[in-house]
Image (cartoon, rainbow, N blue to C red):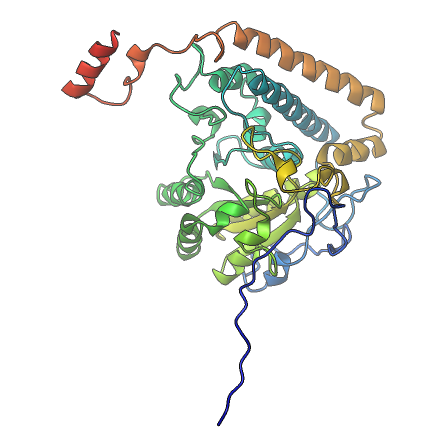
Length: 411
């Protein structure tokens, strides 16, 4: 009996557009703002399955808040959120240029993703613990952590709170509920789950929130975290920021081509939502829902935030090598700052003149902080923490060979 067969063909995902192409978002389709229902807090993961495949949206492009997810939030809180996003963007711009001027070795912006960190920070309690990736500087800013201290950490100068022991942008502040940023991808997610489990064991009221990028969901740590979160019903929010790109590869390489990243939670029995990450109100509402669920001992929530990386992965990256130059301007979910501004103007709580004044004042605040931070040193002038302190707070009793090495260093 003869048998015919076709040769096997390996599928390699590819983005819809490359440098020189016109950005193509024609295949994207989303529910309209207000279309997605809001489930009860105690809905089971199985009942929430469809929420992992749609998209929760509140703001339309005229600035109107529509539907059951529209949160009850005071105009003053919205103005504060808008200012924190503007401050984050101004801070990013200054520090990106500082790296280009040789004042620091490395920087990573959150350009285009500011709503995800700022809105969730405002939705959480101030003592909830955040386990960030490297684009959540908005969490620190929204918790009023001094941007001067952030700059000194970036410059690794004599006033660096980390005393030169961490790469630039890898901040840490225990009192502000901001766990040390890790350069190893995905480690912060099982850490967030473990911290949340410890909080539950201690009978505390604090929850945890961890962030990961779409590319890092391919790491085994992410899947381990899902298992522990599900099994022990950890009071944790697991945030997957799908900004469509890893450092130089399209999100489909990590598995986002024919399904969603939120769907990974469905398979683990975790309540999972997919949300417009450029919609400040949707981010705030979904974060509040997930936080209340965690605080009510109803278990973890995985949220995929759909956004778009507006700039480079980092100052070490050149996105013009792998994507069209103007793709972010054409992204169908827009700019989170522009969208919240339109909403506030529609409420009569903001104006173009107020927006411009706020932008200028915040940029002046950033410039003043930068001037003060640079007076304590940058990479250009070598004003760094003394090598004599490099082992402080590391050992109770420093080993003899390290004491010898420090002596040989002449400090």
